[in-house]
Length: 254
Picture 1 (tube, one colour):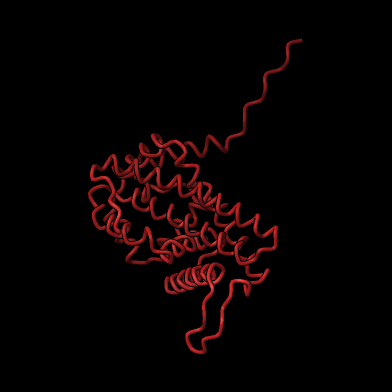
Picture 2 (picture 1 turned 180 degrees about the vertical axis):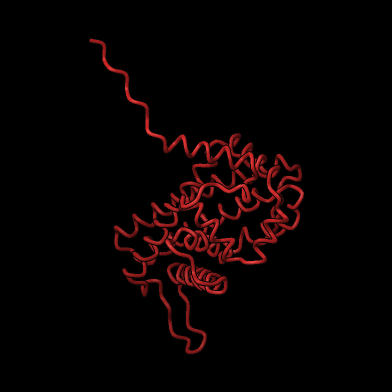
């Protein structure tokens, strides 16, 4: 059954922001459960709960994607949001895209990026289902039991989600103050030329993602092309202040 978001733009933003925060919180709880199961050597459950945690991070990413879409362009974005919200592989794909963007290097091409993310999401979903349910192979009818999941697969999934949650920390922290986050978001919407941004993406997707990757890794300062002149300067000034050495402490009186 389709879920309905508030129609008022301000109410929608508040509701989606609450969903984002709740999804991040639940992702961490699910990962805690996965680690507890790992410690008990319950490999199928550890893998499945970690995979569920990855999907919750993907759900948070889906929410942020909707929030970052300007109000005037939101109608198709809301339709995409509604389609993806309960689709397991969509949420896993968003999680694996975040991991790809957090890696030291991006794939060589847009096709390699999409193929890698898609295959990783399919594997995550398939292994999660293997860890939760008894199944059988469609060609031979051979039994597939959760206990067939081994230690290596479980540890790999838990470690992957550890990396994902670490990569998500900046986004999670940014929404901890909803009023400040929404104020920043509205300034960004006002200062950005989203048509120009779309044209840049369509012209060269990997160059577009490369700029995001460089900013996310602090290799380049915030760009006016991404944030608008005023907001980019504010962010650059805040970054310079953060990197400036602290003033020396005053000398103790003699």
